[in-house]
Each structure stands twice: as C-alpha cells, then as structure tokens.
Image (cartoon, rainbow, N blue to C red):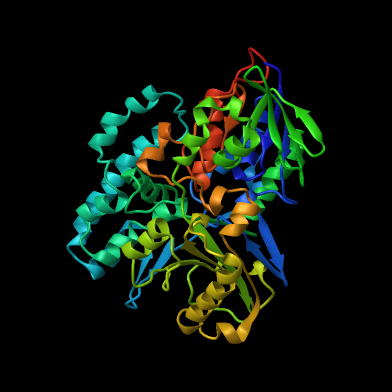
Length: 499
C-alpha cells in the first residue's frame, strides 16, 4: 500500500485519526470546511469571554494522552487536565439536589438521605455497570464490527447482562427512588440517546466515570484541539481550513482521492470524520454505495437536536457547581416530546456548564461565563428555529434568572445561541441531529455505521456516527479502531501501537 491519506473533518475524531495515520507512516492532509479545527469542539470568543462550542466533559483521558505518546511527546506539554468534583450536581424540580461524585462513601451517604433502601441497590447496580463496562468498553470499544459474526459472538454475553433492556429499565430493577433513577440514567443523553430506549450497555458510562473521573481541560476543550493541531504540525501533517470535501473520488470500487473547490487531492486512504449519512448521501455516488442505498439510509433513526445558549455575566456565582443538571418537572414525558412527538415543549431540562468556577481565565476579572444545553427535537420536527430560537433563549434566561442565577438579567454582558440549524448547516449533521444516529440497540456495534466502509475499498469512518458512538471517549475510540482495520502505510512496517 502507498501512503497518501486524506482525512475529511478536523473534529476530535479526525484529528485523532490523523495522528494515528501519521504515526503509521502515512502522508496526511486534513480537510476542514470551517475556519478552525474542532468540529463540535470548536470555540467562540465574544466580548472577552471564551466559550467551548461543544463537548465540555473529559473522561477516559488516557485516550487523549496516548495520541501524544505515539509521537514521543508528553501530553502535559500541550494541555492541562484537572479533576472536577462533584462530577455533576443534579438539581430537582422539588428543590432537592444530589452531588454525583466518584467517592463511593460520599455517594452512598447521599443515596441514604434520599432512600436508605437504595444503598444496597446502588451497590448492586454499580457492580452490574462494572461488568457491562468490562465487556462493552474494555473488550469492544475499539474492536471493529465489520461482519455479522463479530456481533453474534457477543450476543450470549449481552443477553446474560440484560442488554436487551433499556438503561432506565435496568436502573429501575435496582433503585426505587424516582429522583435517584434520574441521577443514574441521564448519562445516555450526553451521547444522544433516550435512557428509556437505549440499550443498558450504555450503563458503562457510569463505571467509566467512576473509574477515571470527570475532568476539565484548562482553557477549555479547545486547548486539547489546539494541542492536537500543534502536534500534527510537528509530525509533518497538513490541516487545510475553509476546504470542504465535495466528493470522495473512486475508481473500480476503491478511493483515489477527494475533490474540493481547489482541486482533487489524490489519496490511497480516505478517513471521513463526518456524519456518515452526509458521507454516503452527498459525498459518494449512488453506484459506489450498494450497501448504503437511499432506502437503507432512510431507515436510520436520528438522535435529538440541541439548543445551546452561551452567555456571560458581570458578576460571579461562587456557590454554583462546575457541571449542573437542572431537571424539570417531567422526565419520561419530556423525552417523549423530544424524541418521538418532536415538539418543542413548554418545560425543559438543562445542562448548565460554568467553567469559570474552575478556570477564571475564560472571562474578564469578576465575570462569569456559561454554556447551557437543552435537548430539543431535531429538524425532522419542522420547527422554524429562526422564529422559535430567540424566544426559547429568552425562556431559558428568564428561568435561570428566577432560580439558579439570580440577577442574571441585570448582569448579562453577552449572549447568543445555537439551534439544530447550526448543526445541519455548519456541521453538516443530517436534520440537525446533535449526535448523528441514535444509539439504540438496533444501531449499535455491527448495526452502526462500520469503521471500514463495506462499499468502497480504502474508505474508513470515524466520529460519533460510527462504532462505538458519540461522546469524547467514543469518538477517540473510533479512531483507535483504525489500528485494527488499516494496515501501515508501507508493507512490512509494524503498527506503532498494539491493537
């Protein structure tokens, strides 16, 4: 095999793939449609504030560290991670709250205050989550699922672990208190899944957080993106901005290059860090994708959309946690409105990120910067976000001013928002889905988009839409799968990391 590789998309998956390709001897060019790297993990700077556009929670940090170690670098020379405690503060509509922490004694003490009977239930739930983690993450997160046999061989273990049940149904077998059920089931929403529907294999997220903790990158997640782009430059790779891929060029069933407005880049390998639906629908000719026909693509079920509000204040809120989950009066019914009915409800649940609690450098002195994420229907809903977006933003600000951020309106310095339209138009996510396809059982592992295209030789996929799924660990693990399915650039040269 020759060694020219083109990576489509400079999101975390594309950057991680580019590092791995370069470490295996490939000449690497990364194409990015926008004017900065990061994709969902890009950054906004407004009025002296720095706002991470997307992912704000870092777990399994070894997946980032090993990218730098592949090149013989010390990751601490590029970015700094600090642990967050509590992982999340969960605020309930009845005024109670729960600090979700890694320390088991503190965790059990809080569970006992909510419902003493659930202490033993949680111990059993945690042990069950650890067993799921050992199978679903340790053994399978970076394993390719290119054939039906890859799926069939794990079915007995999935049955034994009850993975046919949803996350919520499984937690409810161990936990009685409804508020605690919400504490231990909201995590799939962070990867685009409805906890009442996604397979309980996603309970592995709970143990992943318990095992490695929840971290924050000083300077924002953008500092990791900056570190990776700097590393790629030092490794001799090129990143081209404002250069969207227009077509994956093929001949005789294999890739030969990627067409852009500036011409066609020849390639022996193409790695797409793009929504797979966009890749197959828009970047490949129909004749090149028999297994991903229009009919097959239409059957895919999408994740919810995201409404993201960013704002800064001229005062601080020192009693606020770094990560806060603000749960509204409804749980199951609100998720039904978002995922199934696809209507914009009158109530909402929010994730409030206050990074200046940990890193004051992100705002002017004495100021505070915030990011608020609200799950909403994707654009299959037909919602006119140009009209509904500003009104929804006002509702969120009014709610926060009246509850968790008193005086917000009086001290508001800057504010703006993103809707599913941004995800569809700027990030090329079909129908503005925040996380690509939904991580239900019928769209997981073998049933998810494969990391090696079954249609075109030399075409590989990384990112949220392919195996193992969304979230920073999932996206970075998808690039790790390349170690198992992609040979070194030159025949006979061994991979630099083990599979």
